[in-house]
Length: 189
Image 1: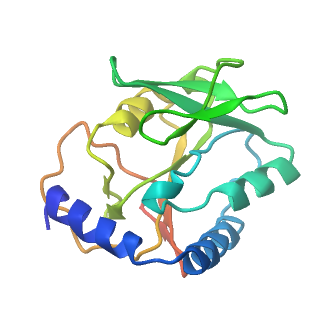
Image 2: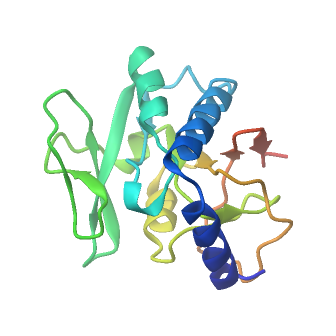
């Protein structure tokens, strides 16, 4: 399937999840994340969930990162430039939803993308080769291309992998892992 078909399919599938199921699956994903060998790093980028789009609830992962005393970074999207700015999440960080219902920091301590060691990536679908389908604006592909080449890119998905996504282009950045409620996919060899 191509990206447009997959976006449509997985938006419908996500919309079919009620709040209880969404929370249960999100907790299972967080438990799968604990199985990864990623806990020696310091700087972790986490997306804050868009509740209205039934995204994976990342609060569980945030709690894990906080419990392990990791530096958590969150982003603010600039829709004029198509870029994301990254800020350290602290007890003093004020968060407000933008016009797309994306929870974002109002301001804070800016952190360069090259500093980030692990990025949890939102997605609608992914395939067995590590390609992903997002919302189609390219924010994460641009962001991930600015990160250090060693930065781990970890997708989070309620659903298992598609065999193949057609229409992949050169600027599409592959994942290193994708975590589902039932398993961890690795794309590193």
